[in-house]
Length: 320
Image (cartoon, rainbow, N blue to C red):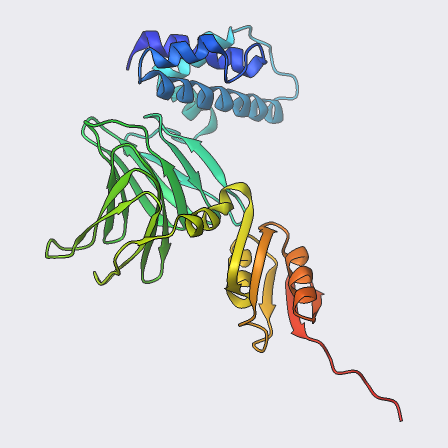
């Protein structure tokens, strides 16, 4: 750890939080450009500052009249960095930075953007779970379930490795997404190149995937070649902005995707399930999605508690 970088990062994080400077401040940019490790130090400082706020909120909940101890925020952040957040672990009763790594989980409908200790960033999609550990030789992530997009900080001496069952993706400085499915892993590359390895070391067990390409890596080792689909990739990653982008997917497929983000679940009449849809929809608005889809397909929507049904229109009753 570079103590000078961490001390300076604590000051910059505090000034950013106070609103004294903007993220594009010239002096800040010059400081970041002076050492490639400083971006990671700033992200760690900002994460520590966020933890300070959470700890204050916790104390406020537990102690109606806490004693106000005047500790300069810069020194507090620096202490958190130097101590590996040991203070936070003691107060909250959880290990925020355990020696074996850090777990990150999202609930249904939650999307988190997490700065990692090396300067990388992980955007974690709904109902997902991953585990991050950093050492001197490599940066290691286990994607236990769900989906995440990684913006990897360049570090030629430490590859960034993500494991998902028998499949391993290795990168140095790039950006890519992985989604675990029941029979394998979907990989989308937005920057640079990644190397994916499937279980075993025989021919075809390693696949290189470049920016703008996607590939499905089957758990049984039988995978198709990477396909160049930059526009499809951008649509597939619209979840990072809370959106579902459709370009001809079926109503049944779209409803299944919306259901990933909500407790309320959409069911689609089988007679309508194959109808194509085009457009952008909010992932957290299932009723709005259902009503729009029904309008486009001349269907009815019935909301019953946490169940939202898209049904064929009932035949009009004829009077004699």
